[in-house]
Length: 600
Image 1 (tube, rainbow, N blue to C red):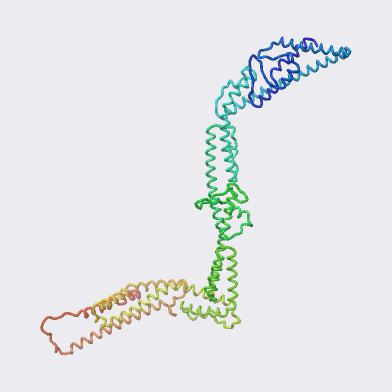
Image 2: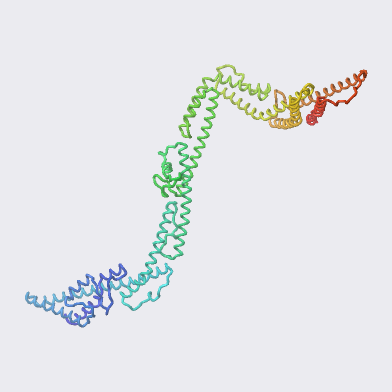
């Protein structure tokens, strides 16, 4: 190997040996050099590969803190190679290698050294490339981070500075340290907001919009404030949803308990019964926002399921109430018909509670039992129904034609006493009872009017009795007050009731097509007849009174004047005579003026 070749090889080794591959990998991973110095272009490192290279080929070269000149290093390397060749020649001489073998061994050594140098060059070129890529990545990171933080950076840091790769990377790392700290804090805050949003949307059963997943491109305070507001809004949505779901759960639990529904057969019912936790002060709290085996959660699907379940349970409750009402009415009717003892009724009533299926089953069983008992007592029930119908006919003033229209009452053969025949009688009772209910308001007015009509005649009879005014003191006063009340009712209430009845009876006739009957008579005709009779009565009374006056006057003219007034003060009319005249005058004036008005 000639000296020129050795010098060329050594220069290449010296050029690439300043940095080691292990140092490059370490810098690429951490973006900072754990220990480096740039002092007179000498780099100290603990790289294992560099130690191996130094121990193999540079045992005679000692790296110091000062720069080793190229010539001295070249001389040392040449000396090393010469020494090596000299030692090999001595060994080969001792062995007795021929000259060709010696040349072949030296060629192999030369080839090995050349390959080693080439490999080292490629390795160190890769290290330099990695440094360059690290610098490029740092610059890109600086641009992206400053853009996300909306912070301006020194443009010189993004340009080539003429420094060594190590120094340039160190400068970028120092500038990035503050940016990374601010970005890390902003990302941590945004990540916390994003995780909360994801959790709330997951609980609600919705998807988080893609724009809220990005926590890299914008790290400004404005963006963090947007996240904060969005989290606050979603918390209100979650609170509202939680309140709505809790109320639905409370309603469902109450309905399930009221209806005594078995929850083992329904997963939803099991979740409903286990979703709430009782707190102090009788308040309830949802166990979890997420669905589980014992909790419904607050998702949209859970809200829909609970709404439908409440609707179904309310419908079932209404159905059961309606059915129990029907059963109760039927049982009450049968109890009344069959004369079931009160003790037995109370025993059954106390045995049924709530709206459970057992209550319905007990009610249906009781109806079945009572119907069986009714079948045994069918004849007696039909007879009793006919008595009720007859009484209702009397109360409703049904005429003979109406009574004859009910043909079922003519069935007398017990073998034809069936449930259908009893049902016909019950229907007739219902119709008559409904008619009686419609008639009752008019009947009450008629009773009041009839009472006043009778009172009017009584008042006339009292007025004819002059002895009533012979009483003295409180007895006379009481009697006069009674007569005054009677006169007031006759004057005010009788015309009022008469007018009301005329209107009501005409309305009844217009609606039913038949006159309103009272004691088998058209009451409009009854009132007209009473009016005519009263007018006739008053006319006769007036004639009698006139005849009495005329006869009395004629008798006084024929009687001789044998009585002469005594001397002294003359007494006026007695109090009794005055009250009598007043009473008679009231009686005359209170004629049936209202009747006359109605007749006109």
